[in-house]
Structure formats: C-alpha cells, structure tokens
Image 1: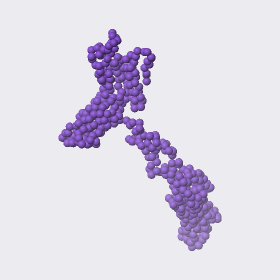
Image 2 (image 1 turned 90 degrees about the vertical axis):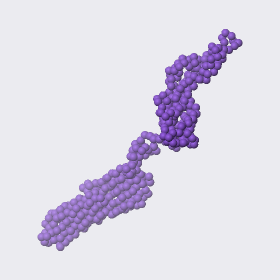
Image 3 (image 1 turned 30 degrees about the vertical axis):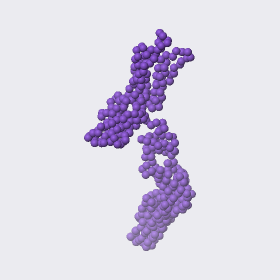
Image 4 (image 1 turned 180 degrees about the horizontal axis):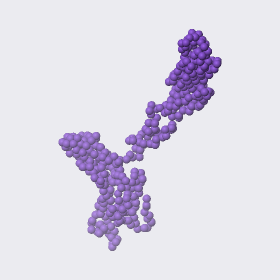
Length: 472
C-alpha cells in the first residue's frame, strides 16, 4: 500500500488527500483479492426475509465486492486511472411489495453496481485577492460541488432474469393466488455470491463440513489416522475381504516339512485359517504266490482345524509348520505298510497329527483284509485372541479286501485313502494295481496284487495344507 508523505510547514494540496484516498481503496481491494479472490462478485449481508403475513420481501443491508476500474472519470483534480480494483459496493436495506396475481410468477432480485459523485455541498474557498474574505463556491457563483464518490449496489426486482451487467441475488417463486410471501418461496439465485465468514469456517478442532468435501485417497495398505475417503473404504469393502492365500507342505517324495512365519496384513482385523496335516500313505502289496494275495489298506486323512484369529488381541504374525504327505508302502518281496503323514502346527497352541499309514498283508485263505490307517488327531490349547470353532480328526482310510485266492475267481482291491475337508483320498486300486495318491491332506490308497502277481507300491498321502482368509 502506497502512503503519501507530507512535511511540517508544507502547503498540503488537494491531490495529496485524493491520492491517499485512492491508495486506501486499492489497498483494501488487494486484501479482498488475496482473501476472497480477484474476480468476484461476492457479497455479505443482503438476507432476504418475509413476515409470512403479507406480500413484502425485505432485503437487509449489505455489500457486494466486484472487480472494477479504479477511476474511469477524473477523481477531483486527479486524472483517470484504468487500474483494476476489488471495490465494495454498499447496498442499503430495501423492501419490495409484490402484487398478488391469479397465475404463478417468478421474480428476480438483482443488484446494479455503480459509482456516483454525490454529497453536493456549497464549499467555501479562500479569495487569493483578499485574504479577509472567502468565496461561495470555486468561482464565487454559489454552485455546489460533490464531496463523495460513492460505490452503490442498487437492488431491484423484476420478472426477467438479470443480464451480464447486473448481479443476480434472490429468486422469489410465487404460487398462483398467493396472498402472502413465505420463506420457502425465496431462494438464492446466485450460488457463488455468498462466502462463509471467518468465524463460520470449519475449525481445526472437530470440524463439521458441508457440501461435498474431498481429500486425498490414502494407499490401500495405509492403517494410520489419515482420513479415509469413500474410494479408500471401497477398497476395504466386498465383505471386507482383503485376500485369500493357499499353502501346501512338501510332497511325500520330498519328506520333511515347511516352516514359515505367517505375516498378516496390517489392515487385517480378523483372519480365518484352515490348517490340515499330511495324509498317510497307502499300504503296499507284496509279490503273491499261488493261492495268496498282497493287499494294502488306505492311509488316513490328516487332522483338520479352522481357527479364527482376532489380530488386535493376538498380533499379526504366527509360526506355521506344514507336514508332508506320508510315503506309500514301497512293496518288495516282503510286505510294507504306508508311512504316516507329517504333522502341521500353528504356534504352540495347535498341533494336527498326520494320517496313519495303511497296513500291508500277504496271505491266503477264503478272504483277507488289509488294515486301514486311522485319521490324524489334534491337540489345541486355549489362547487369547484365538477361537477354534472346528477341530476334527482326519477321516480314516478303508481296508483292502480280497477273496477267491485258492480258486480261479480272485477278487480284490486296495483300500481307499481317507478324505480331508474339500479333498478326496486316493481311489481303490484293483488287482495288479498300485495305490493312488491322495489329494492334499488325504490318505493314499492301498495296492493290490493277486495270486502269482508281482508287488505294487502303495499310494502317497497328500501334503498338509493351509488356507488363509483375511478380513479388514
């Protein structure tokens, strides 16, 4: 903001005062432009009300700010100025009486912005020819002069919408035959005109937003205290399902187990974990002589559990061990039973035992049976944040059966492997058939060798497995 400098003893000219007035308006306009924008128009006050008992609409006093030319005409003895300024136009309180009509009508209250030199006053001037007297008017002719350059917003009401040179403010929709104006008939006709005052702005402490507030969308992995947009929440939707993963332990031919630390997502609130031990191998069938048969029973399925973990109580990591499938009996001249499936475990609170391998038999007689392996068992210790709604022993395998070894009508098969939830054990194996492998967590089937047939291997048990489903 520019400021005029004057000195003691200086004769102050009229232009000094006029320049100071012009600078003040430009400074105020710059502040308005910085805070509210440099285009406008925008307003305060001008509330439109009615009593509800008559046809009068009252508009309160207010002001409208709009961009304007500083001085398109001379300002006193100063010349014109084409510089833009954000100018305040004052609107006095105004009332409008609307005529009742048989038909509906829509009326528009608008403001016309103008600058007028007003306040005409007969001014006294010093007489340079005689210092003892003054002049009435600048030419001593008694003519009054304007003393105020006023910026005025004049409110009018019309049945037509405003044009580009007029600022629209209110709209009044009057029903047919209305005898009084009510507040619901009055609506804003310029949604960009009014801004909230500084006290009305949202505070930093417990703000209450209106309209359609927007914010940056955090990454989908964010679990901080940042604001969650609807786009972020949508990513957590679909039943709050975050992910589902499937893991399996080593194959029976590899043996051993797979150990891991299961790390759950930071967004996870509830995890449902299904865990199963390895299935037992099916019994092998030894080489059979005349009037004898080699049979293997099916291996049992591994123990199974469905566990629900509350991450806010339990934590986000848990050690996991997945057992291998049990190797099927590797038959030779001597019968060989199937191997047990490997154990699976979760932390120190849950152990699931692998299915037991099927047995093997080499015998004759009217009929023989090969013993089946039983299903794996479970051990669970109650732990905070962990619920185990399903704890189940594995499904036992089926026995191998054979008849007619001493006749020409031999009939036999190796026992079927035990099942696991969602998976099937190895199918029965007929005469001179090797055992079939089991699906994950299931037992392998036993082998079958009829009279004078060579040995057959039992089916391998399926590896232990885990399915992890995470929910936000």
